[in-house]
Each structure stands twice: as structure tokens, then as C-alpha cells.
Amino acid sequence: MPHDSDALRSDILILGGGSAGCILANRLSADPSVKVTLLEAGGWAKDPDIAKPDMWPFIQGREFDWDFETTPQAGTAGRVHRWARGRVLGGSSNLHAMFHVRGHRADFARWAELSGDARWSYDGLLPHFKATETWNIPEDALHSSDGPMPIMLPDETQSHPLVKDYIKGWVALGMPRLRDHCGEELIGTAPNALMIRDGKRVTTADAWLTPDVLARPNLTIVEQAPVRRLILDGTRAVAAEVHHGTELLRYEADEIILSLGAIGSPTTLMRSGIGDPERLAEAGVDCLIARREIGKNLHDHLLAAGNIYRAARDIIPSKLQISESLSYQAEDPTRTEGRPDIVVGCVVAPSASEMFDNAPEPGHGFTLLFGVTNPTSRGELTITGPELSDPVTIDPNYLATERDRHLFRVALDRARKIGQSAELAPWIAEEVQPTPGDLTDEAAMDAFIAMAAITHHHPVATCRMGSDGAAIVDSNLKMRGLDNLWIVDASIIPEITAGPIHAAVMAIAESFASARLG
Image (tube, rainbow, N blue to C red):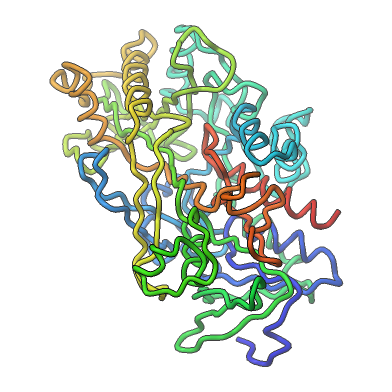
């Protein structure tokens, strides 16, 4: 760890080496005249299980996971949900399910509307999506073949036999059979495109922090360097105060970019004295800049685990990563265009929330997950003290709106419909969950969903982008109220995309870097 003042000073200081931070470190250090420093609370991934795609459900809670917890959620039967977030270079791309779904065109129309800037529309972002991707299918107007992140669309030889019948069942029910979930339309069923190469998970650190990039003399990556707070001088963030063992070091820079994620970025700002004055006072932090919306607008995808079946035949192991196909659908099953409302996924294993203890053994059952694509419930998070060691209070306020509860009921009905299809009948010995008593009326369905719901690990919007004065960042991702601070991560997303957010986070980072580099 360097200690001399020159070594601790940069032109650009990137805080957080997660999915966005790795891309920024690569792209911004491509200009040899700019000295770039990337600080990461963890280090390089060492756990060999990270690279194994089918291990993703089982590696949460290990040393490279921040392993946050929510407050008890009234909407999910008073349960506490563990939120896995990566404490490692590559961030949560080391932990997620590797899905690659951009979202629907209408999602990004909302981003453009809320930001007042067409660069955040689907057409504005498309070049940046493509710049991050290398697909294993022929290049076309929507799919690229020269980006750093490999995107594998499974073929017939790779997809599980159960999943093939699951997809056939939806087609028989009138759902479109899509090639993939990154086309013009999202409603329909397709195999999941995955961030996998040669049978191994690929993280953003793998893809962007390659040996040639690490060899650049103007790029410094500092591991085991969690950020305590920013140091302000009026309206400038002049440095980051960083833990290194028992020391606190001061990293200075002309420009600072927060890429600490939907939890880390707002809580770092709060510990720095930027936030809701009342919340900061409760945490024992002096308010230097009042920004009441920091930490608010929090939302996340939920999935219910779920509609569980005991199999009539052995379920062979997945060649991929267990969760092999998603079906995006509208509330009206006859609508096959536009923004979806719900999603149903096929997991070739018995996936169940902690509230259910009657799931079949692995190899003898499977689960249909179901959820809402664009939830309307909003929560908030806040710090409880000035130190990194002080817990974060996370309240996503799950299932607080009637619309979310209604659409979850629709999604449950839709999952059971495919479960009762002729195409899946040969696979099913019995439906384990829900039981008939769970379906007597809407209240019973809500109670079942509350026990089945699990996080899909997609927190967003705690430093939302917008054209209004209350928004934390403007359309250039510059933080309002500070002269030299930008935020580039999932926290700036104003409204969640219909699908997993990782593809959008990579495009956000690429868009920002492209604008900076001209």
C-alpha cells in the first residue's frame, strides 16, 4: 500500500471495483495522460466456486459477500431477507445468476423521460449495450461480436429436457417463442442468455481487468480498501478516507466517481454528511449538504419460490446454472407486445424459500419461480452511525402496493397454468406448493406469496437520476450540489428494468465512459 502523497493522488478516483467500477477503470485509463486509481473493499476472487455456474445459489454468505439484511418486511410475513452483494473485484457479477436481459424499450423510455435526455432511451443505450457484449450467435443490428463480456445463448444440446418442454408448453399456450431476451420485444419465452465462457462464469473483472489493462502505468488498483467517507471542501469532494487495516488513508483526486452500488454509494454519501438532515442526526453525523432523497426510492425485484413440483422422473443436473429459462408476459395473456408485467422462470431444481420445508430432494423436483417485472413498492435505506461497521438499515417495503400484490397473484396463476400444461404433465408426480388451502381466496394467495417471496438481488434507485431538482444526479450522472463527483452504478437507475439489471449497469458504465472519452 503506497503512503507517499503523490501515490495517493489521482486525476480520477473510482470508488468501488464492482460491475461498473471495473468497466470504468478499463475505459478511463485508456487515456494514458490520465492517472486513474480504483479502490475496492475486497480483492481478487479466490474462491474456485465462483467460476462454477451451477454453484451460484450456494456461494452467498461467504467472505466475498457483504451479506446485508433487510428489516422485517410486513409484506413478506415479517421475514428478514439477506441481500448478497459482492465484496470483491467484479462486485456482484461474482454472485449473480449470470442472466443477460437488457430490459424492454419502454423501461428506457421512462429513463429518458425522467432524465430529460434521449441518451438514456433504448436507442441511445443500444450502442453501449452492444459495446459490452460478445454473443455466440451471428452479429446483427442488436447483437455484437466484439465486446469484452461473452454472452452465451444455449443451443438445443445445452438446454435441459425439462426446459425444452417448458418452452414448448408456453408456445402451445400462445406465448411467442423468442430467440433471446435482448430483442425488440421481451414478452415471450426463450432460453436464458448467460455470462458464461467455456463452462465458467465470467465476471466484469475477468472481462475488463485483463493483463494488458492491468499493465497500464496510469492505472492503480488498490485492494482491501473500503471507503469510510468522502472529505469535502465546500462543494468539492477533495478526497476519500479509506481504511487500510488499522490506518485511515486519504486518497485525493481531481474527480471522484462513486461506483459502490445501490447500498454502498448512498451510505458513503451519508457517512460523509450528505443526506436527509434528520436521518443523519439520528446516526450521529453532521449534515454538510442536505439531500433528502439519498437512500430513498429503493426498490428491488422479488420472485416467489414458489410453485414447487415433485418430479415423476429423475431431474438430471443442469449443464448450465439451474435457472435456464424465463417467460415474460403481460397481465392480459393475449397481449404479446410492449412492456411485460410478470415473469415465470423454470428452475431445474427444487428451489424454495426458507418458509417451506417440504420441497423434494435435489434430482426429484423442480420449481417454477414467478414475480413482477416493474414493482411499484418503494422503500429506503439509511445508516445507523458514522462508521463502516455500523449496520445499514434496509427497508425495501416489499409488496406494499395493491398493484404489486395483484400482479403477483396473476403470476402465481400463470405459473400454475404452465405447470398444468400437457407438455409438462410427464414430468410431474404432484404439485407440492401451493397447497389447495393456499388458494381459497385472494387473502390466502397473498399469504402464500408473502411466505414464498425471495429477493432477486436487484436493488436500485437510491441515488436516482432525474431532471428534477430533488434527483441526486443529472443526466450526465453528475451529483447535484458537488462540483466534481459522479455516481455510476445501479443506484442511479430511476426505475427498475423489467429483467435483471446487470446488463443495464454495464451499459450505464460504458455510456458514461464513452461520453467522457468523447
